[in-house]
Length: 186
Ligand code: ATP
Ligand code: MG
Image (tube, rainbow, N blue to C red; front, side):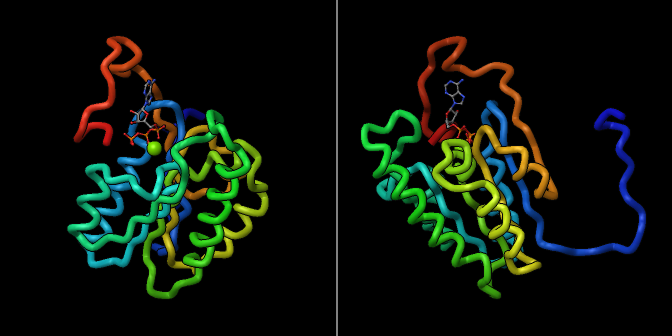
């Protein structure tokens, strides 16, 4: 059966907090998560964003917008994954951020939590996927959690309710050497 042939499951309408994963090599994983944050914010839903790679000094367009809107965005990383000169420090920051984000999973006030670039903790083995999935599944039932990043492990995909894989078709850097531009990338 192809994806297009999936039929929606009939039955009583139910509501639940979704585990959402945006993965793949194409661009749009983080921005799609931020788009959902904007929607939730527009609905007056309390939302929070934890970023695992971007450094605390990150002041991209999305950080500026979030500040103006009053959306808490917490970047805590050193900007590196596998390229890190000090992998233990990079891993330590990521795990510290995980502890903080994990504590938000039970907040009865929170409606949506974004874990941006979280898949790298699992991909690089800094955190056991099983441990992460168990914690995410143990979240407050109405909380939506959005995880972004490449190489989402199968176990995370299996646990998720909504998974989208961004496919790289063209990228201005790859084909034309055009570097990141404000408003589009940061
Ligand atoms: P966005 O934040 O724009 O939604 P993303 O979250 O899907 O993108 P990441 O995988 O987090 O993208 O990558 C971070 C940045 O790397 C993005 O700004 C993206 O445009 C850029 N990027 C993605 N693919 C390539 C590529 N093939 N060459 C150069 N840069 C790339
Ligand atoms: Mg991203």
